[in-house]
Amino acid sequence: MIWDWLLSPADPARAHDVGVALSWHARTMVLGWGVLAPSAVIAARYFKVLPGQKWPKELDNKTWWRWHWISQSLVLVLSAIGLGLILVSEQNTGAAILHRTFGYSVLVLGLFQALSGLLRGSKGGPTSRAADGSLRGDHYDMTLRRQLFETYHKLLGYIALILMIGAFVSGLWQANAPKWMWIFLSSWWLGLLFVAFVLEKRGWAFDTYQAIWGPDPSHPGNRMTRLKDKVQAPHSSIGPYSKKRDM
Image 1 (cartoon, helix red, strand yellow):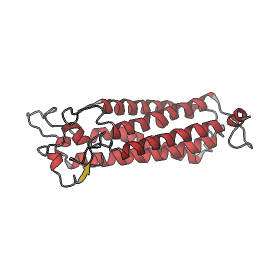
Image 2: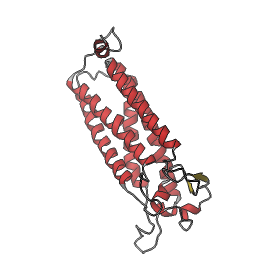
Image 3: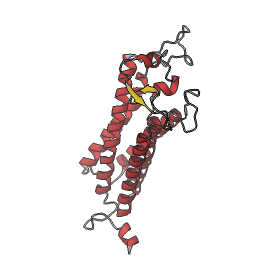
Image 4: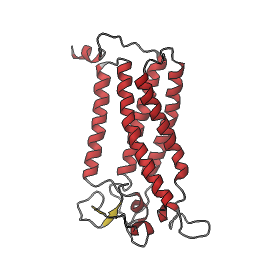
């Protein structure tokens, strides 16, 4: 029957035998890196301007930021729990070299991402003035520090997600997970890719700078020569009227 087939392990020559610690290690990592981490990325890329928000009259909606920050914080907590569980597991023999390589690489990148928040610099702008009352700030002025942070943070985040898939696949194979787990996780990842593709095509990948301060050329970040790509109005079919960076 189909149910028996779904419950059977991927490799019939091996048993699917995992202890409590190992099974909860998998659950915490799937929840953290398989659910919360990609949802945080999707929120940061596609929901800086929400449906129904009257941009540019309504600016700096922090819903995406709160979700991104809370989700990533929970990812770190779950990662620490998952790491602790695998370290105390009696089944941690060190034989799963490929999975360990992927897993530790993801954890290191996750830690770097958390620490990179210290490199963001100051915000500045009309709503977060400097101590001297000026508008100066690393983000508002798009200083080199801020540009490097955005490039670093985005690049390492995407690399971590790619390595995460490698960690999951190697972990499923090492544990000889039942077929339903392979189908469920594969469907989940494909679903996330489909959502990202649709939102990208519809122009929801809106620039952080303009989501916060709008497209007015009086803002220094909007006058930078690297802002050259026309974009559609967020969540509409109105013609191009502002400029953007890729995130």
